[in-house]
Length: 328
Image (cartoon, rainbow, N blue to C red; front, side):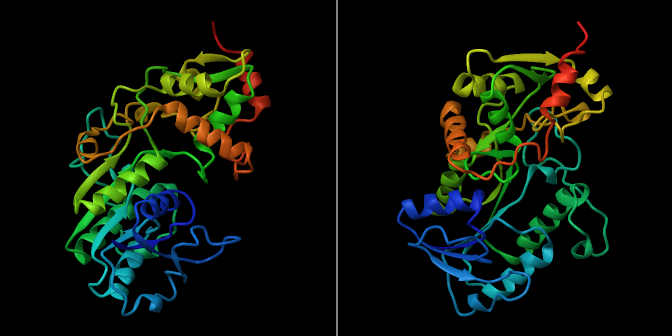
């Protein structure tokens, strides 16, 4: 398979490319080339800014195309125009943020999508408030542009090279031991997807010509937030580690939100990570043991991965102060 990946050097795309190369496919990456060096020297690298110049794609033909970094519909349309029908099977990486309301337990891919009600979505600045709506507009643009289309909507993607610091924050904090503030409810649903599992599965979707929308999420819908933290602890925690659970409502009253305690689904979003994984599972998405995900992430962080402690999370001092005041 001749595969074009738009992006492909950072996180989700990087692991998809790794799976494709390992599977013997011929891979071309289109990216800005802003890193210290291009990963995957066995692949072809086209350096271009997709917002400025896609002329490198003129006259090229691919069996499949993956877009991991489409955020505005203009980007989707311009890529399709540059490929001019020669991109083959198209896979667009969207997000579960595309859903209009916090999806309840068992929500499937037909759940209502966001309508951002914007005359010109391409003019909107990227913010958390419009991210999901812009992903929906990108999905629509892809539907207008490609006959053979797969849409993947991930939940929280975790693993090595994660640039968000969310899952990595919990791995780092628990690996340092001591009393760890754990926000309730402990039994709130939690769905992650290992980036390595996701990359391998997306390559299989293309190999098998599978189209349509799919969740990329934990294949076990009964998994919980406490199981995530306990699983991290089982893999990396020193003996003195204690998960100290506090009521989520009380934590919110202290002015703490999900931006400070990463991956915590607070308030009306507490049940939003229980999506139906059936379509993904039926098409081959498999979850390797969670301990492997944790350890691979921890090794990457320990060996110089770009984790930035404190960038998106509660400081140790603030956590200690809250731990000292948890109501009995």
